[in-house]
Each structure stands twice: as C-alpha cells, then as structure tokens.
Image 1 (cartoon, rainbow over the protein chains, first blue to last red):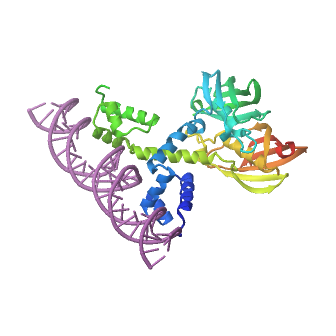
Image 2 (cartoon, helix red, strand yellow):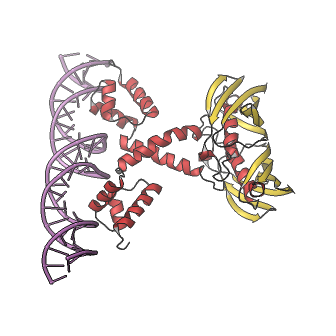
Image 3 (cartoon, rainbow over the protein chains, first blue to last red):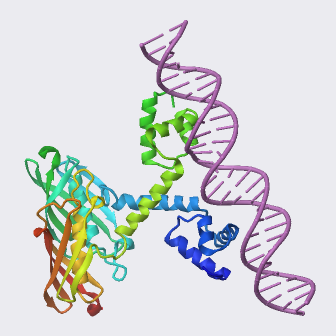
Length: 187
Length: 187
DNA sequence: TAATTATTAGTACCTGCTACTAAAACATAG
DNA sequence: CTATGTTTTAGTAGCAGGTACTAATAATTA
C-alpha cells in the first residue's frame, strides 16, 4: 500500500474495522505501511477503542441476537407453556428480520417461530419435524408483534400433531400443522 | 460463599461461565472465596480458556451467525435461472444447520431455501410472499445435498404463483406453493 | 502419623494496549 | 531558502489479565 493522506487513511481504518473489528494496531500498521504509533493516534482522533474493547462490544451486543435465532432456543419469547398441551410465544419483529426495501418480514422468521414453538410444546426435548402444512396469508411488516399459539391436537405413540397459529393484533398471519416424532421413544 | 468441595466448585464455575463468560479469574476467586491461583488450576482442569479467549470466541461466533442468516443472500446456490419461468438451486447442508442431537436439518433452512428461490425466479427484484402451502415429508440429515426447483405456474397481473420442490437424491423432501406479489407494479 | 491431595504464594514473562515525552520528516507560507 | 506548523515515528513506563512454572503450606485420608 502506497503513501496515502491522513484523512484517507482514517476513512479506510474506519471501514476496515467496521467489517472486521479483530485487527490489532500492529496488523493495521502493516496493512497501511505506517508505524504503530500512527495507528494509535488515528484511533484516538477517530474515537475507536482498542481491540479488546471492540471484541468485547461485539460479544455483548450480539449475545442477545444469538439468543433469538441461535441454538435450539425459542425464536421469540415463551410466555406460557403447558407441556404436551399448548404454548404461547411472542416475537417483536424489527427491520433486521425484514427485506430492506419492502420492510416485510422474511417468511422463514415466521416459520422458525412456529417451528420452535411446536418443538417446545412437546415434553421430550428431542423431537423432529415430520410434516408441516402451512398457510400464510398476510405479509407481516417490521415492527409488528407476532403472537404464536401452539396446541397439541393428537398423539399416537411417539408421534405428535401440533397446530400453530400466528397472529398480529388478532389477525391470523400464519397457520400450520406439524408432525413431530419423539426420538426418546424411538431409540 | 462457604467452603465447598473442589468438584462442586468445578461444576459451579462451569455453570457460571456458561451463563456469563465475562468474569475474570479475580472476580471468580472472590465469588468462591478461594485464591486466584486455585481458579486458574480449576480452569486448567476444566479446559476453560482465559477471559479474553472466551470473549473472542463469543464475538466471532456471533459475527458468523449474523452473517450466515443475515443479509438478503440466496440460501443455497443458484445454478440455473430462467426469469419468470423456472430456477434451480442447490444447498449443501452441514451440522451447523441441524439439531445437535438428531443431526436433522432445521425446517426453516429448508423453508428459507424454497422462499429465496421462489423470490429469485421472479423478475421484479422486490416481491413478497402472500401464501405458502407447504408439505414436508422426510426429515433431511446433515450432509445431504438439497436440490430445489422452482416453477412459475401462474401469473395474474402483479401476482405470481410459484411451485417449489426440494429433493435429496430424487426423493422429494419438501414441496410448496408460493404466492408472490410484485411491489413494482403495485406502488 | 505419614502420605496424598488441595490450596496458596510468588516469580518471570506475554500481549495489546494507554499515557506520555521527544525527536525526526514533511509540507507550506513568507 | 528558511522558519513554522503538521504529521509521523521512536521510546519509555505502566496496566490488565493472563500463562507457565516452582515451592511452600493446609487439609484430608489411609
């Protein structure tokens, strides 16, 4: 990388750290062909904290998001649960779940909400989807609060049928029927 | 906190750091009323890395997750496309998309693959889901390669009906009908 | 009581910094 | 071309939160 002006370097540093906050000052100094001290001064004037602080902030910030669509956890917040009977969860949507242009929530978030609620309502902690039968009428807009209700409608041995509805202000935006099979009993 | 046995303390440390990985050894030593050295030994035998490593791993994990199911990316790889007619995409599944215990792919990945392909096949780059009618028979296992085919079956004004099938080795694992509405024409 | 296990203390060293001082390199105006 | 200001570099001391190691002291158990 050749001689570039201070202001230009500042822009670049900002950009680089935005897309990848894990660079040390030393790595940046090599990248830009300046001394470590210069990078330090740059960070100072740009108000960019040190590596460890940046990493920490990424870690804490996203901890919440991960919980929402991470592991096998509930997508949405489980607010009522009667095992093997019924369950209710809510999900506050936001623009990060929507198509940028239309602000309409991507279908798979809604599907994921329904799926995880259907799984949560079954007592056996490992269950799998056999069949889903979905109807999704009205598009959901970013900012709307989804309320999902699940009800176990049938059980045959290790097989469960669960119906899930999702509403926004009492208007149904989604419904489906899930066939779940408990693994515990099968193996 | 009173005298507790080593093994018990180990369990507690594990639990505490699992729910909150941001404690320093010193904070832990105060919490458990033992010396910092003891906490170090504990971490060693439990194979728990130091604070900074824990924070870093949370940060990187989160960053990937946000990127993986974040953007408006195609879920799967688009390998053939005839606008407004049909399209094919493939998706190589892996364990990160599956439930840890059963290795069965989470339903919403499959749904997302179908949804994005249905959107891709329509020329207008902003289209939204009106209705989806889903059947999902066979569970997909981590490692299997999904092949999705989309076909526009009907068009009425700004409304499109798209059928999507997903196969694994010519066995249908999913099918659905999407109703899409082009925004360009509506607005 | 002796042997074993668990805990504590202490030292040297590491990374990735902050905070500071001071010198050198470069650019620009008079 | 020289004086002045800006930018960059160099170097030192110190900090947090460790690793890796040695050695001594408690506590437990045989």
